[in-house]
Picture (cartoon, rainbow, N blue to C red):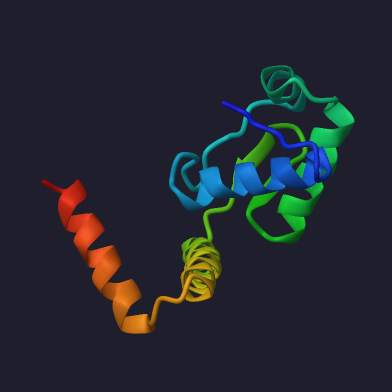
Length: 122
């Protein structure tokens, strides 16, 4: 399912959403991606917008093109693992910053996260 906000360009949101699908394992290394036409219809975006997003994903090394066969997810597991860690670190730092702005200390944040995770796992 594709969700787009009005505050940022669609192609950057496409890059983020496809990247997340790769980093989460929803799109597997070596897997063939749907065609531009099919994916743009599914996401309800202009094919040129999706083409631009794929170009950026290729620059990041997450996607590669085989001329006659289409686009595929990178098989470079090291690259995927590294980007996944970077994404996680950025998310954690944003979360910690928000919690600190609410007045929580590092120890309080850790305790709160632990408590909430234990509640969720019951």
